[in-house]
Length: 270
Image 1 (cartoon, rainbow, N blue to C red):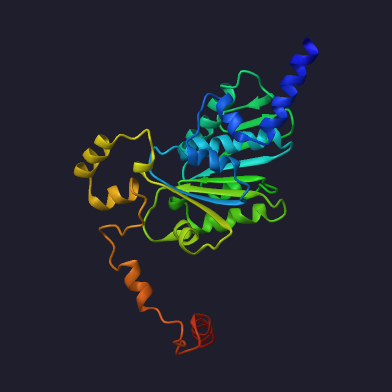
Image 2 (tube, rainbow, N blue to C red):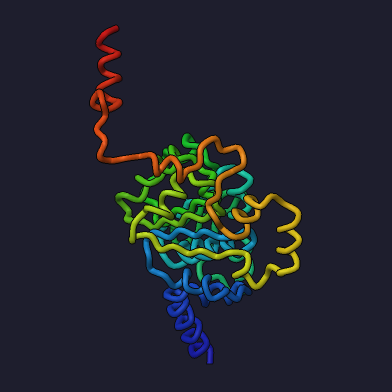
C-alpha cells in the first residue's frame, strides 16, 4: 500500500514536471485558457500585452515557480521598475508555493526578495536599477514585469544574462505609449516572440459594468491603454509617433555622412 502510494506520487510529479497547468491546479489556481496555453508553451521569448487585472502576474509567477521546482540549479530573476513592484510579483510566487499541500522541492532559504530551494534553484526579485542586476549571469528565466516602464538601457543590460545559458525571457505589461523596447518588440521584434494580447473584455473576472463605469470616469487614452491594450499617444505628446515614422525616408542619405562623421568633425576642429 505504501509503495503504491509512493509510486502514485512519483508519477504525478513526473507528469507535473512536463505540465505546469497541473502545478497551477495543485496551487488552487484554475488557469484561463490563454494562461494554460502560455504555461504549456515552449517559446523561449514571450511577450504579454495585457489589461490590468487580467492575470498576467499570476501566470508568470507560476512559470517562475515551475522552473525552480523542476529545473535543478535554475536561476530565475524577477525584474520590475521598482522594488515594491518586484516584491508584489515575488509574493505571488511565494503564495503559490505555500498553497502546495505537498512540496516536491523544499525551500531551504527564504526572504522577502529571495527563495532558494533544495535542488539548487533560486528565485530572486530585483528593482529596475542597473547596478543591482550586473552581477547575475547564467539566468534560466528572466521575467520583466511592467516592461513598458523599464528603461531601454536596463533592458539592454539584462539581455546578455541569457547569452550563455540560452535562457527564456518573458515581458509583461500594459502599454505605455508608442516608445521603448516593449513597444518595439511587440511591433517589430520578429517571429521569435510569442505574443499574447488580453484585453479587459477577454477576462472573465472583470465585469462589463465596471468597464463602462471606468470608460466614463477616466480619459479615453487612459482607458484604451489600460483596458484595451492599445499603444496610444499621451495627451502631452508634441509629435505623434505615426507622423514621425511617415516623415522618415531610408533612401535619403545624410548630408554630412551621419552623426558619427559630424561628431568627429566637431571634435577634430577643437
